[in-house]
Length: 341
Ligand code: UFG
Image 1 (cartoon, rainbow, N blue to C red):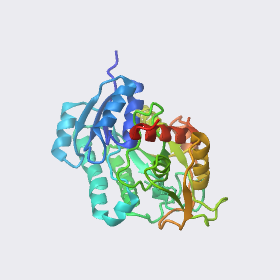
Image 2: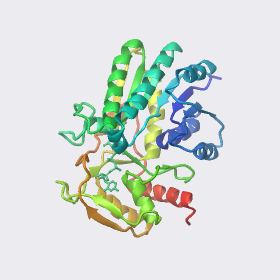
Image 3: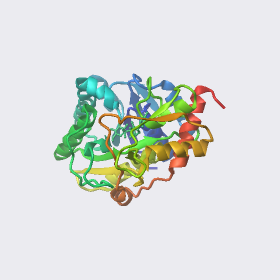
Image 4: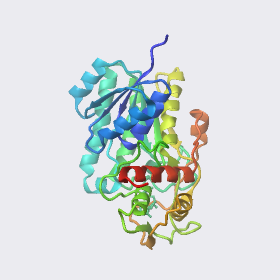
């Protein structure tokens, strides 16, 4: 029998990382997950094991630690790496840019060094639609130019993509997945997002307001040039995001070339406004949501949604869940962690 493909997942206890480990295990991959657990919880790893009924290696480790990474690579023979480990708060990155460059760019540099040393070539990289800034044309496709990044977080993703483009010359084969707005949780409600402190992102704020943890949601702006005046985004179920990583590994393994850098948008192609999302949440959960309209949030892009043609064709992937299901799953997860019925 062919040896199982062994995949290293960095940031495996994080939001998208943990859902991806589920998809990999369900698809028959052997997984080693690492995470610092600095901004995630070990309970999520238990959740992954419970969902899949499968054991996998988990190690507390930091991608910035060269010696630790070398040990992990020498103890295992990996066929591919999925690199999620990074900081992701736009606001925090504005206040602490150097922390973001060190962690997000630095961890990639260590990882690339170790991959080269141990001759592991295939890498899936967590990028973001933030690399586009406010695109001139929407839906945005992968050929759109990078505008000046709105935040150090966004800049860190642009820099990492540039590094990976160049690393192709040295035998690193990359698929960069540009996530739009991942939301929701695993349908089992055993894993989901665990925001730290007051959430910045819309859906955790919505579910925490519905759960009574926050008194009121503020919709940031209703005077944009969009149909209802609120911002437009491409919200995508986290399990759909996760499943694309499995397709991306297969895609790389099917390629003969030693020199690959491919970027794909990971979105549904449907633009949904903030107010539409709020209304959909109320409709599918039956829970009333206290919200008000407030001023615009500085730095927000008015509208952005994906042209998913390239990812649908190239990775043979398509989003399975719709907005209502995504919001219902986010709500089931919130209830689970708050002990609500
Ligand atoms: N919003 C509100 N109220 C809130 C929170 C958010 O109205 O309490 C609005 C925002 O103004 C925005 C929309 O909801 O219009 C989505 O905001 P999020 O913070 O959920 O997501 P963003 O689109 O701002 O950011 C996401 C990721 C980033 C990534 C960015 C790329 O969180 O990591 O997409 O555009 F960089």
